[in-house]
Image (cartoon, rainbow, N blue to C red):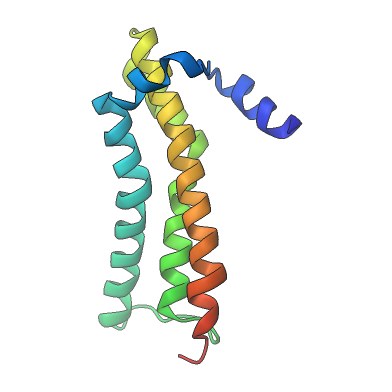
Length: 129
């Protein structure tokens, strides 16, 4: 728990549970969550698939494309760089910056959980390819 608190304090995230319904209605939240959770997973997986199709790259022995998808989901964790970009984008708008940081935290949590579950239950089943 101390590491989690350190991450929140270090990132300057102010969590106010009373304002969470308002935060979840923000377009900023949905844009960030779509970018980190869906965009990262789709981009990493697609580029890896393309390099394999073109013969530029190949997967290590014992790894299959299900593993790539799981790792791609984990790519959405991008917490530090996302906070940096949000600071650049919203440095004059304190409320929007706090909403963006909260969205980054939520998206990182979702991406990490989805990546873990995918690798644990889906990719584990088929390691023969």
